Length: 304
Image (cartoon, rainbow, N blue to C red; front, side):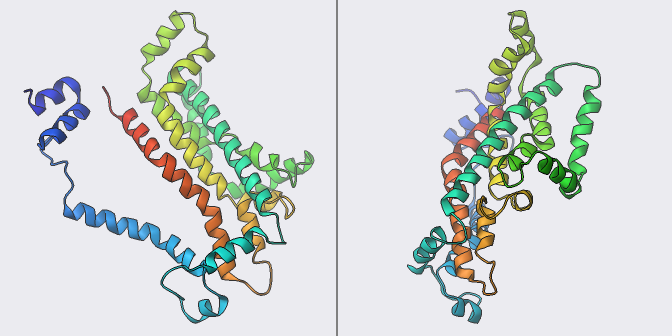
């Protein structure tokens, strides 16, 4: 049977780790099996991460008097939570399902465009050679240092001139691509896509766009999946810019939750119930896609 160091030298560290797991041995002098301390630390991280969600459910199932009397009105949620869910969905100040639809449209369209355009730009910066490439990439990265608030006034004037105020395109179009996505995909393709594959595709007669579509895009799939997830979450919870260009008749979910507290009396239980309803799709997304996304990143990070 081959030794672990020999497997690591011939097939790489990933294969060596797989062989070490089967034999219970060490790779590179480190025991890969987690100990009790690891599980304790992971348990603490899980508890800290779930604490805000637990507190949201507890407050969402309480009443205003109990909330005012105690920081933690009760120890666990009860059936009142579902009553508050119903009140949020049937609220008169906004259409809940319209807000959900608007948030889905914005998040999906922006995520898809960000992944496609960022991967296209990243491919150009990583694998194409043209004058000013490095300077232009530095300029794109430098735009991340500019606060978003500095561009609000001129961007609002442009949206007003286009008569897009109150419409979803005023939120979608300015977010179609961002500097972070371009930087992310450039760095990933720089390492994950061998230049020899691009040259081979060009020799075979493929156009530059065909090379991107058939070679670069599949190679960028793990990083693109993570970028899509980050972008979707950012757009789903985005409040600042939509609160400026949208109105109460055409809100997204964060704006709709704000409408629950536009009174002299603030019902925190109703607001927390709305916050949980807004968070629930993200929890479902991570539950179904999180493992596959992490597996994709690990597969892209291991060299065969």
